Image 1: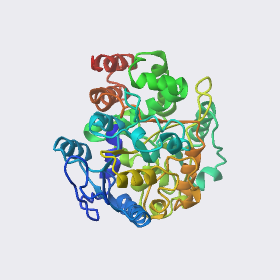
Image 2: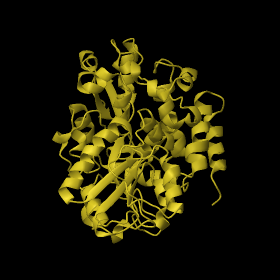
Image 3: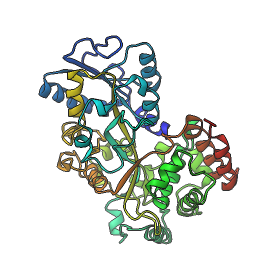
Length: 431
């Protein structure tokens, strides 16, 4: 979902001027070959943490590297490219916008040793920004894991609850917590004009787990319809787990009326108002300051488990920041090589109030500032496949349009599931 990432960024103070000295030249990035300008949407405390990594990168390479936060990233980057004033490197929150600009970019295949660069990436990440021409135009420098299920500590263990290894065990755990008298799940999804994206994330989770990565990829391209058995089963699995009365803190109408950023607040209350909530690692930034300061005292996590009869392995749904290049000068090449390495992020990960997770399975997990983030990083690094958020890859009128609105209409019982799925298919552009 496109908007979830920008909401996360907008939830902290935008630091539009947070840069060292961003000097842009015409048509191909900076005019000085020893300067590299990077722009992106990372903001707030996370951008402050990132600046330490950029400073270390500049010191180690001898290149004057700058990073500038652009709050309205999609609009500004497209304007700069159209005005023949691109940065050297841009970091995109969504692969769709990146690929829209590929004709103005340098294919990474022609700039770096792609096989060597991607060999240690978590499976599935290296192909996120591969265009129809077969070339790669972007790679992730950081990721978020939406398949993370959070639970309160020590209350979860004190109650004798066990981490589920399958969907059947997750459903049994849900029933056990419910019988003990606490709503098992926290879930809410109001997001203004973007209301619905949190629901679509859940549908994507189960299409990936039930159908597997190849079916998921086909569905994202509309080679498999929304009105198909695998998507309907995914929606029904989510409905059984979350929408069954008593399974969540809020009822259907309450979920749609409560801001998504407040959804997991009951999880860190004392006593907890729920025992499970699924959201990416960026949710840490929405919890109270005392939780952010040392999340390990309040929460731990596990990955949403596999579904019996579905994909035989651990899948992770998520998002991330994808770096792309607009020139191939030597300084840009050196910086790209540094960005796309298992060592990138080690300084960033040590800074307060960051949610950095590396896309590399070989990243040193001891570098994460908290055991909470380290646990997410370790779990993702051991996953069998990673898939980028599906709605972020769909045409805008679907991924950030009908998919959101139709799932909202279904959850709030304004439409049946069958009708909602048919309506999404009907909204898919003809070409």
